Amino acid sequence: MMADLLLTIKDLKIEGRAGEDWLPIIKGVDLTLHRGEVLGLIGESGAGKSTLGLAAMGFARDGCRISGGEIVFDGIDLRKASERKKRGLRGRRIAYVAQSAAASFNPAHKLIDQYAEVPVLDGKSRKTTQAEAVTLYRKMQLPAPEEIGFRYPHQVSGGQLQRAMTAMAMANHPDLIIFDEPTTALDVTTQIEVLAAIRDIVREYNTAAIYITHDLAVVAQMADRIKILLRGEQVEEADTRTMLAAPKADYTKSLWAVRSFTRPELPHASTAPLVSVQNVTAGYGKLDILRDVSFDIHAGRTVAVVGESGSGKSTVARVITGLLPPRAGQVVYEGQPLPPDYRARSREQLRQCQMIYQMADTALNPKLSLREIIGRPAQMCLGLKGRALQERVRDLLALIELEPDKYIDRLPGELSGGQKQRIGIARALAAEPKLIICDEVTSALDQIVQEGILKLLDRLQREFELAYMFITHDLATVKAIADDVVVMQHGRIIEQGPKARVFSPPHEPYTELLLSSVPHMDPDWLTTLLTARA
Image (tube, rainbow, N blue to C red):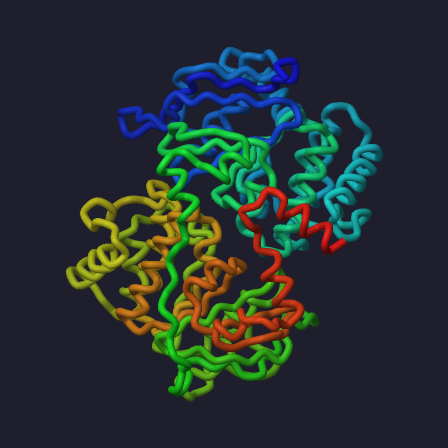
């Protein structure tokens, strides 16, 4: 096996700048990887997973530095190698697949142009490169592989874009790929396709991979070995089956046991709905995305809207908020129809419905302090000024369990992912709404942070009798927090009702497909599922 050794990291130390000081991020971690082997890196937010993955390329983010240790890739000491040498390896022999494909592709260029950039620079003809792209698109099970490359990034779904990025990473048949949470934001059915495609292509090309994730069930399907990190230190490492069956460290056992939170089941709603979506048909251009959609949201309850990518979940939210006027049907608030266009709604009508977005990184203005981010809706919607406004901001920070004195003047870039999402919650609460639409608010967070956010949302709901519309593809989250469930497919409602009834057999075929696509903590689960569906 030593003859196949590809990557060796010894006593790696990485530091991050904090003012005039440098603080440790990675604290003496070791790592080995052989050709064709997949190593899973697991740990909560801030554990150092992505930092360690990037270090395998000899790279450190801005504000960070590799301060000690050794990184040797196929006999090349990356700490001593020149920048030119390292740039020659990256994208060719070492590739990186980012978590957010939508943020990583250039929106102004077609997929095929971005795929071809490095191969053409290396001397391949454009014609040969395009033919190889089609082959890889086909291996990645992308629809219409001959023509999908000629689309722009916004013209394909999230799952298709993630597979296109994996194909681009494989363009030069690299020896090593770092996958950084490549399926985190995908629905369960799309995730199955992406996982299967990644696994097959890694095996076919005998490519080594570092697979970074916070989803234990996903890493069980992908990794030969698992390494657990906590605050920049290695907790334990073992082959996947051993790690799943018998973790040794208390921290690892706590990861295995996380997501125990489930809110008590509420009785069936007997009051009039707060919001009623009635026979809504809506779309973009001539294309209908929603077709005759109807459901109710009651005060103090959570309606989870679930379905795969493209089912219309977020489009419903746009209709409710007035961002997308429907072609037919209406949205009724407290018994009164709302104007279909938000520009025709009163300030009071706008105040009553707020949103928390999936990607806190892009939803918060990086140049504004938390004081300004949270204060703006309180000022605009409630008319607060001066001392009253500042006290409201401090109260909201305390409400989301962040110390006001410590955080009020920080910028979003100084926060963790979970803290940013809490700021998104505070910003939504600042307007004192009755309905909050939560759009995939936990999908980009590790499981420990997810549980904290769900508990916070539950506490706030009980305290203020808020209504939630929870858009999600995570059925574990649905089971934890929902009172009612709406299942959508191709813009139509397939099934809806109280959670207990929707999740109890017999299921509608599509609901059964969603439930069966939730990964299990079993290394053989994906293989068994794909065999059964073949």
